[in-house]
Structures are given as structure tokens and as C-alpha cells.
Amino acid sequence: MTTDDISGMGPLVARLSRGGQRLRQADRNRPWVLDTAVVVLVFLMFCLPDLIHDGAGDGDGPRRFRLAFTHLPFAGMLALQAGLVLPLLWRRRRPLAAFGVIAAVFVLQWSLNAVLRADIALFIALYSLALHGRLKQLPWACATMAGAMVLVAVRVSAAMSVWDALFFLLSTTTAALALGLMVRIRRAQLAGLRERAARLEIERDQRSRLATATERTRVAREMHDIVGHNLSVIITLADAGAYATDLAPERGKEALQLIGDTGRQALGELRRVLGVLREPADGPSAGPELSPQPGMADIDALCAKVRAAGLEVVYRTSGDVDALDSGVQLTAYRIVQEALTNTLKHADADTRVHLAIIEADTRLTIRVQDTGPATPPGPHEEGHGLVGMRERAALYGGTVSAGPAGGGGWSVEAVLDLTPQGGVR
Image: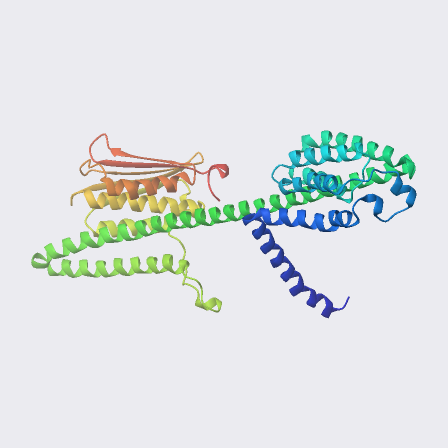
């Protein structure tokens, strides 16, 4: 087969497929049309020739074969044909009932020693039963067919061998049964494939929505940490600068410079977060400008910024915290940042903050305690700040507890699990 032949088959196959789909849709909308068409076709092909010849005795075939059967009157022949063909109208809706009626008429006809071309309806009914009926009904149908075929073989024994007749009749019965089962299995396979494709599409959409929700939560957490902390520092510096403008102009100028530095740092971090979300343009150089995520080494600068805002921060570490995984360092930095931000929001100007980060026994403990008022977090902070810290700690099998300290003030303590199976690496 040439390339042109193969390419020419594509549109033809596509048209046939679309035509088949339209026919199946039309059949689902009006199933009676196809059933009626089958009855009309069987009547034209198998009933009409017998009616025209007015019985089997006047038809074609060997004389010995014609004389062996009863010549039916026109009315009797028409009644038997109607009993054989009309039940095909409900062969798909009630396949067992249609098969039973046709089989009964078939047995009655051969008991009268009459032969009709419309007997083909029995094989059509068996095919429909195998395709549309219940599988547990098939053994009874096969037994009925076997008995009917034995009756036919006995009746035609005057014209041909009983065994030859049985072989032909049982082969035809087997073919009708096998064809119905084959189409049934094929339809079941196609239905299974369609169901699996629909299920995979639903699962793909669910995974996409879950990934989107996860990414949205992560970005919202990053934005809250960045914007919340830097805005708190800026607001505190602005208030302090406004107060110091009249008393110490140089302190007001220093506050404005710190506000500018903090704003630029926040803007850079926002650009980094938002730049990752954008689709990169053509070429690798068009992507966002990336910078390392903050870690333990950046906590000193974070404490210095909080000190510049007016709080006294005492920071100490224990263990090799600089050698921790970058993900653990980012989590620790964000927890410290959020805890200091909350202190900055609620504490007084003379508040003292004790910050300790301790790495020991495969655990990292972060403790932030201030000497300010034991103010519980409001609904907004509980919804974002503390929840965000707990979400970050949970990534490493950790916990976060926050509440009033024993000696006054507010305390936040986070414990992270550093074992490989307890965290995300």
C-alpha cells in the first residue's frame, strides 16, 4: 500500500467514524426506527417471497423436498410470519420475551410440518438475546434452540440426512450466539475504555486544581511573610521618625533611610516571588531574576532591622545551624520572621526579645520570647501568621506552640524534626 493510499484512507475513516457516531446518537434518540427497519427488512427478504409463491409447495427447490412439507393457506402463512417477525420489534428492550415468542411460533410451525423463510427470525432473536439479555438466560435459550433444531432435523429427514441437517443448523445457531457475544464483549470493552478515559480526565483536573491550590497557598504564605514583616517594620519606623523629627532630626533622617532600605528589600522579594509565577518569554534571559532564599545567615540582618525599629533583640544559637538543609533554614527564617513581626505589632517600645535557635538530637528548636504584654493574636493573625508557621513546621514533622510566657510577655516555640524521614528534602 502506497503513502497516497494510506493518506487517502484518513478522511474516509474519519467520515465513517462520524457517520457511525451520528447513527448511534439517532438510535439512542429514536430506538424504534432501527427495530422497525429490521422488521421491514426481514419481511421483504424472507416473508414476501413465500407470500408471492403462495406457500412452500410452489417455491423453488427439489420436488421431493417440496412434497415433504404441508402447503399452508395464505392466511395461516401470514399469521405464522407475523408471529415470527413482529416480536423482533422488542428484541432489544425485551430480548428474552421476544426469543420466547418466536421460539414458540417456530416450534408450532414445524409441528405443522411447514417450512418458512421467516424462520431466520429465530436466529436473529438468539443473537439479540446474547447481545442485550442477561447471560444467565443463555443456557435456557441454547437448550431451547437445541430442541428446536432437533425437531427441524427430524422433519427434513425425508429430504436429507438428519446428521447433516443437525450440523448445518447447530453451526448456524453457534454463529448467531458467538456473534452476539462478540459484539457484547466489544461494546463492554469500549464502554470500559470510555469510562477509564473520563475517570483519568477527572483525576487530571483534580490534580491540576490541587496543584493550583497548593501553589496558591504557598505564594500566599510567602507574600504574607514578606509583606507583613516589612510593612510592620516600615510602620514602626515611620511612627518613630515622625516622633523624632522635632526632637532629633538626625534620628528622623535615619528612620527615613531605614524605611527606604526596608521598602527596597521588600520590593525585591516581591519581584522574586511574582517573577516565578509569570510565563517566561522567549529565551532563557527573559526569565525572572532569582536570588537565594533567606537562611540562618540572614537572621542577623533580620534582628538588626527589628532593632532599628526600636526593639531590643538578643539572639543566640547552639549547634551547627549553618550546615542545615536549605529548606530547613528557610522554614526557620520564616518562623522567626513571623514571630518577630507579631512582637513588633503588639509590644511596647522597651520590649526585650530573646531569640534562641538550638540544633541538637536531630531536632531544631526555635524559641522567641518577649517581655511585652501577653496579647493573644487576633483573628487575622491566627488565620495567617500562626497558621503559616504551623504549616511550615508541619513540612518537617514539627509543631508550633504560642501563648503567654510564664514570667510575662508572649512566647513562640517551634520544634522541627531533622531526620530524613521526618521532613521534605
